[in-house]
Amino acid sequence: MKVMIKVTFIFVLSIMIVSCATTPRSLPEKYNFDNILEAVNHISSVPMPKYEQVDNQSIILRIKRNNYYLLVLRRPIGFTAMTFDITNTAFRDKAVSAEQIIGPKRDEVTGFESYFTTTRQNIVGISSGSDMIVAHDSIGSQSFYVIEKIYKLKGREQAEEIKEWLRNN
Figure 1 (cartoon, rainbow, N blue to C red):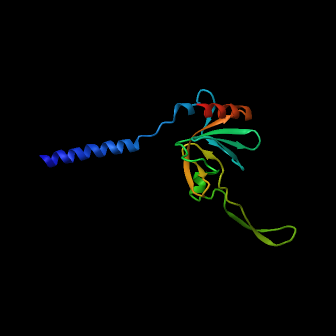
Figure 2 (cartoon, rainbow, N blue to C red):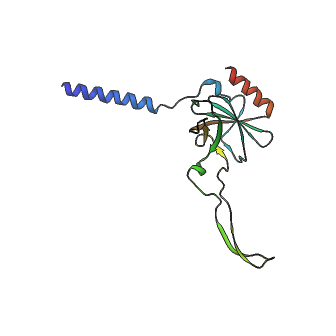
């Protein structure tokens, strides 16, 4: 009988531990901009982005001149990051979305045959829920943070307003 009680106790305790570990974290309410900003699931082209850490769980991404996005991370960054990178599914899996060899092809000017190789396209875009921000600290270590939500901002002025609001709340 005592063995049965111990086994039941261990079983119940195990279920409680597993259920706590698998319960998804919810974002703090201050990051819920669904009624204010345009939420997007994907940013299609990310050529040479610029990053600015707003607080420990959000980053403003600037692409080209006036395309601003607020990236809300699934969990807080545990340190002040020195630099950021984006890693997306295609890059992590080493998928080659546009790598192929076409040829041989005769050059009309020189008359030589050559092969044309297209290049890898590592960051075609980023998506919320699967792609990540890589934060690098001052000693060279890195940590990965899943992008939970992406909001499109209407220019620099709105980016400044959102930064100020998040830093004060």
